[in-house]
Amino acid sequence: MIASPLRFYPFSFLRSRRTTGSGLLAFGGTLAALLVLLAAVGPLLSPYGYNQQDLRAGAQFQAPSPAHWLGTDDLGRDLFTRLAVGARVSLGIGFGVVLIELVVGLLLGLLAGYFGGRIDTLIMRVTDVMFAFPDLLLAIFIASMFTVHSTGFTANLVSIFVALGIVAWPAMTRLVRGQALALRNREFVEAARTLGATDFWILSRHVTPNLLAPVTVALATGMAGAILAESTLSFLGIGIQPPYPSWGSMISTGMTNIRSHPEQALIPAVVLALAVLGFNFLADGLRDRFDPRMRGV
Image (cartoon, rainbow, N blue to C red; front, side, top):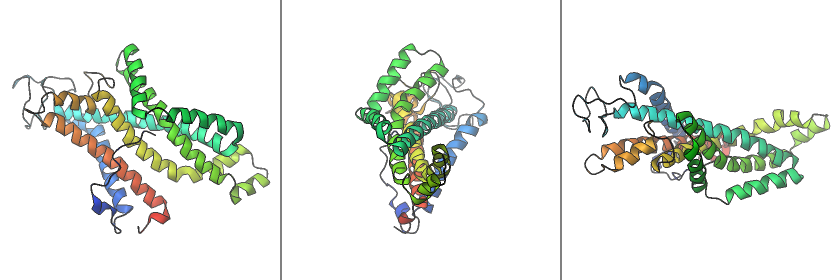
């Protein structure tokens, strides 16, 4: 799981006794839903393509108007369209990374925690080696290697999936292993084992269902981290390559004109911050909802 640095609470009222859990869940869920809506419907509402230039009023920096709701960038491309297509990129990569995190982390964590022994030792030593490298630096190294040899948007997208997926699974593996260690000696597992249930049956019917709550919370947090990590790679020029839009590359391009046209960088930066904040709040709300000990805190 790629840890997101936005784990503070700028809206302290959301942590009050009255709104804990339900307030965070509603706020984070609303932001996440708006992001999904922007990605799904936004490009359909715009008559422009993400790389289409509108030169009728000059190529550079058209102001917001009925024709261009957020104006245009330095090449006359509609900023709203690029923002919405960038949301598709962020969500697509986020879902892909958490899927890798779920499949690899859940499988390895269950094997290590339930069976233990040499399997546990081998998996955890590999996990420890992965934790020895800083997540972002490792992702930058892997993505830069793939970017040199990848051509086309699909290859570029796969390279980011691989880079972020490789650094995402160790945290999920450690989380699942710890939960599986606590569950494998519980009474209901021992009863199933006494009745002759196979290990596969116990894992699928007893252990895995009891992991849903912590895994769901971890995936919501991982989604925020993956979106932020993809934007960071694109900001540095080793993520999504032009002309396809990404929030990170839009911020990077906007920084060159930050003094004369600050909205070019501020708009995608604000949308990125709200997306990361929304999934973090969603994760905290789910944690409070799933854990009875957090209610009323």
